[in-house]
Image (tube, rainbow, N blue to C red):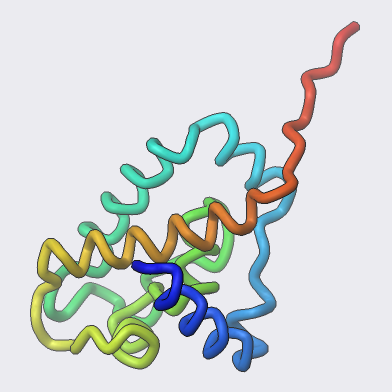
Length: 129
């Protein structure tokens, strides 16, 4: 996803109060910090393959939790949470399996949002006794 595409997407997303309400908590940012962006991307691709890649995913529209892991929250924030949202927000049609390039694109979108959320984050320091 180019910077221009991201900026255009962000402009559209900014008009959705539902999508704009999602932000990573400090605990979720700590998870990203500890796992690292590479591992977050690997996990994002696993989640996409498992929950979204089929032509007709199980429980489509309800398969992505709203919280509990940074990738899940990113999926909702970016319209990558179900096949209906992928069609509406990213023009990826329902009713057919995702192509590899689409999986990579969806992971790019998710990771770009997570990266934006991490800007300015200072990791929590362990308590020293």
